[in-house]
Amino acid sequence: MMSSPETDTLQNDESTSEKPEKMTLEVKVESPSTCVRHIAVTISRDDIERYYDNAFSEMMPKAEVPGFRAGRAPRKLVEHRFRKEMKDQVKGSLLMDSISQVTDDEDLSAISEPDFKLDSIVLPDEGPMTFEFNLEVRPEFDVPNWKGLKLERPSREFDRADIDRQLEKILGGYGRLVPYDGPASSGDYITVNLSFLDGEKVISSSSEEVIRLRPVLSFHDGKIAKFDKLMQGVKAGETREGKAKLTDDAPNEALRGKEITARFEVLDVKKLEVPELTPQLLEELGGFDSEADLRDTILDTLNRQLGYHQSQEIRKQITATLTEAAHWDLPPDMLKRQSARELERAVLELRRSGFSDDEIQRHENELRQNSAANTARALKEHFILEKIAEEEQIDVESTDYDEEIRLIARQSGESARRVRARLDKGGLMDALRNQIIERKVIDQIHAAAKVNEVPFEMEESDTEAIAQTAGGGEEADIPDAEFGGQEEKLPEPKDHT
Image (cartoon, rainbow, N blue to C red; front, side, top):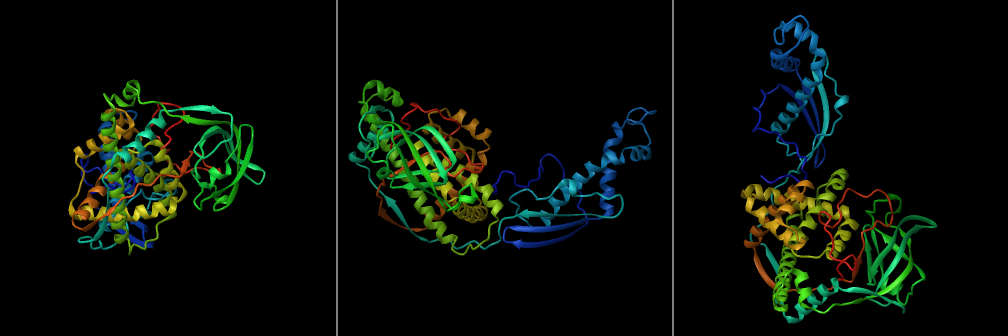
C-alpha cells in the first residue's frame, strides 16, 4: 500500500506487539467536511478495569512495596498503592487502542494524527470514559476510468545547436564577473542592497545581493515584472525603486495580493566573462577527457530534462482528466502542512532530472507564489493515484530507491551514500516513495493510453530568482531549493542559465 502524504500517518506496529482484545465502544462519526471526521468515543467501565488489571499484572513481578521483597507484595496492596500512578499509563493505552480500533472498524484512511489535547481527556474513577477528536482522512471516491485516455506527448531530437546553447550556459556558470564602469543593460549583473517597503516601513531586506538583469525578478512571495527595463542603464551609486506584486499566498497575510516598493541601492555593475573550454576546465567540469565527452553528457542531460517535461506534460493531461470530478474541500491546515511536502517532492523530481540550482530556485518560487492552489491540486492527484496504486498493487522496490538516489547524486556531485543519509536525516524518504509510486502509476496509465507525438519547443527562461520573502511574515516550513546545503563551485555567479 502506498504511504500517505504525511509521514506521521497513524499506524500500528503489528510486528512488535499483538493486537489487544477488542473493546466494546460506543462510536459516533460525523463528517464536517470531505477530509475531516469528528469522532466521539465512549469506553465502558468494564474495559477500563480490564486495562487496569492488565497493567497491574505486568507490574506485579517488579512492584516494590516497603516491608516486602520486590514482586512479593499482595496484589490488592499494590493496586491500592499504585492506582494513581498507573492512571496516565492506562489512559494512554485506552486512547491508543480505542483510536486504532475505531479507524479499523469505521474503515477510516487516516492521513494525520488525531487532533485532541491529551491533558483535557479525563479517565474517571467511576463510570465510562468519553473523549472526542478530529481526524483527517483520505476522501472517499470512485476511481475514474483511466484506461484508453487520449494523450499528447512532446518529442524532440536535440541537435548541435541545442548542445551549443547548453554548453554556453555551463561555461557561464564557471565564468567570472568583472567590474564594469558603464551603465547596466539586460543580461548584466548588479550587486545591490535590496529593501522591500510598505509605505515608508522596511519589511524585509538583504545586503550585497547579486542579481542578473532579466525581464522578471522572482522571489518567494511575488515578482517584479519588466525588471530589466526598470534597471536599464543603472550605474553604481544609483538607487532605483519599482513595484513588487505579492501573491495571494504570501506569508504576511496583511499584504497578500498588494503592491509594495522594492528599493535597489546599486553597489556595482558587472559583466560575465565566459572562460575558454581548456583541459583544466574539462577536468573541473567532471573529469572529461575531451569536449566530445562533455557534449555527450550534455546531450544525456538534455534528454533527461526532456523526459521530465514529457512526464510532467503527460501527468498534467492524465491528472486533469482524473481530477475533473474531484470537487473536494481540503482543510486549510492540511494544505498549509502539505505545501512543504509538495515542494520537497518537486525539488527531488527536478534534482533527478538534471536541472540546475538556478532552475530549481525559479520553480521553487513559482510553487511558493501559488502555494494553496498548487498544494490542493497535488493532494487531489495524490489521493487518486494512491488509490489506483492500491488497486493495481503497485509498490516500491529497493532498486527503485537506489536508482532515484543515484540520479540525485549524479546531479549534486555527491556520493549515493551521502545523498541517502541526507534524505533519511531530512525525513524525505517518504516524499521519495510517493514520487516513485506516483510515477509508476502515471507510466501504467500512459502505457494504456492512445498517444500522439507533438513537437517540444524548449523555452528559455526570462526569470531571475532570488531566495527572499519580500513581504516578511512567518515563512511556512518549506526547505530552500539547495539540496542538503550543497556548496557551489563558485560563489558568483551561481548558474547563469
